[in-house]
Image 1 (cartoon, rainbow, N blue to C red):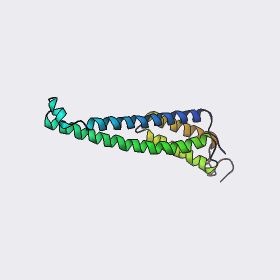
Image 2 (image 1 turned 135 degrees about the vertical axis):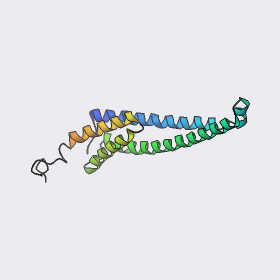
Image 3 (image 1 turned 60 degrees about the horizontal axis):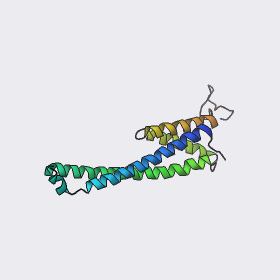
Image 4 (image 1 turned 90 degrees about the vertical axis):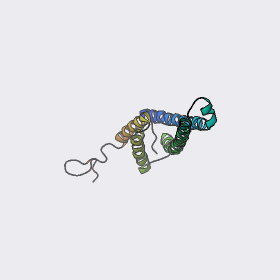
Length: 153
């Protein structure tokens, strides 16, 4: 059984915490957008908004509410998947090819996370690459004769 230790464990833990905070943030944003979208149009008009501006504002906040909800669901699902896989690695629940596959997944998820949560993406990438190179050095590299290193073809 493989157990994640040291720096990769710390980086992964920090990444999970940041991912959890992002999940909470988007839930809060969804709630706030729902509250704002529920403001009666008449109240906005009474505050000297034009009917057109009130309509656009309420429609926009409704769209933002739906977008925030979708992002919350996506982050929530991925957070659960990451918690199961990464905590399993930290506690040594996996071995062999599963460990390697999870580190590849962590690197891929880190790369995807770079687009919307840069800090988490960088943490996951560093953790996965550092661990992969430590435990699987040169595994996928061939020498000049076309043979895999470590005497395995």
